[in-house]
Image (cartoon, rainbow, N blue to C red; front, side, top):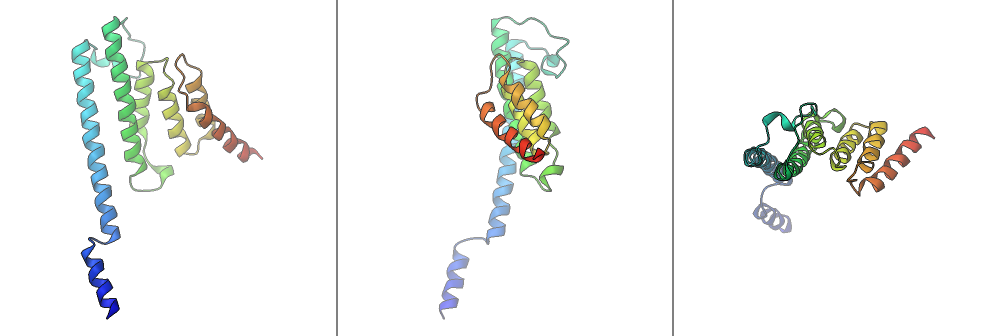
Amino acid sequence: MASTGSNSSQSLKGPTRPDHITKIRLQFKTFLSEATGFYHDLIVKIRAKYGLPLGYLSEDSENRIVMDKDGQKGLISCHRCLIYLGDLARYKGLYGEGDSKTREYAAASSYYLQAASCSPSSGNPHHQLAILASYSGDEVVTVYQYFRSMTVDNPFSPARDNLIVAFEKLWSLVE
């Protein structure tokens, strides 16, 4: 009789654990998609407000024009949005289906490269690229990107500690 009571109390608690996890994953994917749309729209609005040409945020820095102070504000805002878009794309890849080494992070990489092009003095995009490289097990690129993240005009402060961890991991492979 005790087992019957536990079964009925279990069914009152809600869906089974796998169903609950599936529901949370779906909600998370929906959130990521909505947030991505938000930042895409925000970049469009920032470009319009500050008069940033469409090609200005590409990875190709050859066609740059000199920005006034207001244009620089717009560029900094776009830089932040591109980092956020890269993070959202990275989360989509990270929490997607399949093995982490075979997941696709091309969209995240593209956003981070655009952010680096937008603000070459920022270390943040290189730090994020290092994280992507670590997912694929490319320790040399990981170390390079962390190092690069620290050697720009505006270094990304967490990069130092992450570089130490990456060096330790690389050194353990050599030993």
